[in-house]
Image 1 (spheres, rainbow, N blue to C red):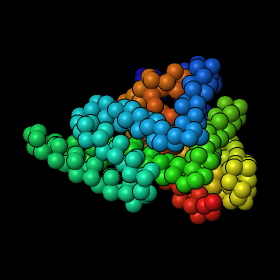
Image 2: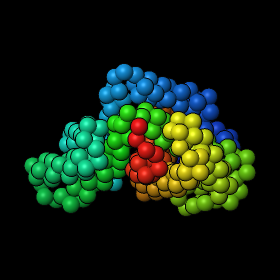
Image 3: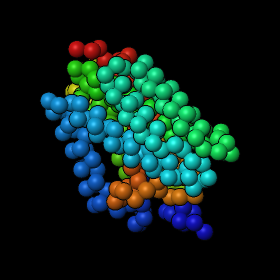
Image 4: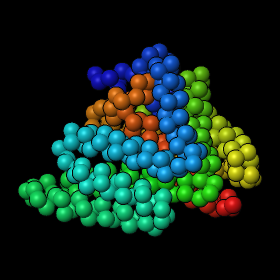
Length: 289
């Protein structure tokens, strides 16, 4: 029986770890979360905002490496070099030129992967190219919407609202899942994720979104609550989607880089699919200064 099958039964949020019903090493997890928060907020609110794009590139590179390493266990061989180069290019283009340039960067990255793979034997070509396209779209392309969020004059506050709302989903779901979790949400995919935890995520994100909109963006709390509920859905789907990928590969975590969390992708799984929705809703709900 695998480690996944023997894990504690229910939990309301991603970031599964061993250690009692809480499911993770809380002191280590909290310490890592504080460090990650500083790595994001310090460059984001500094006079040199482009340093935040450097942090995004580093995160995208590490996430890409973890995905490539995992997919290789299934026999696929994504092209790491063009993925890293294209990923950095996508994030720079997104910050400087916007979402249209981000899409162009994705297309150029896919083209680079096509050309790079031509130097190897034809066997497995479609498999390797599909794995490369999946990686490019999943990690740097979705992360690029965070770069787009950071570009306007109030970009640091928009990014803060985005990340803080997803954190509300994690914390609210985790607390409710640990305290009240009894009914599994998707037992065949993520056995520790419960409907009670999902309800906790919804409540925390609605309240957190309302407060963040009113205090940081001077926008309607009702719109903030709707924004929070939307990000609850994307964050939950992102967590379940990555759990499905990990089950297909046969691993519990994408890595061991972050004590108390797992790999970096085990932290990005909720953020990445939420980024384009956050950008779209903030563009619609909040007027640029």
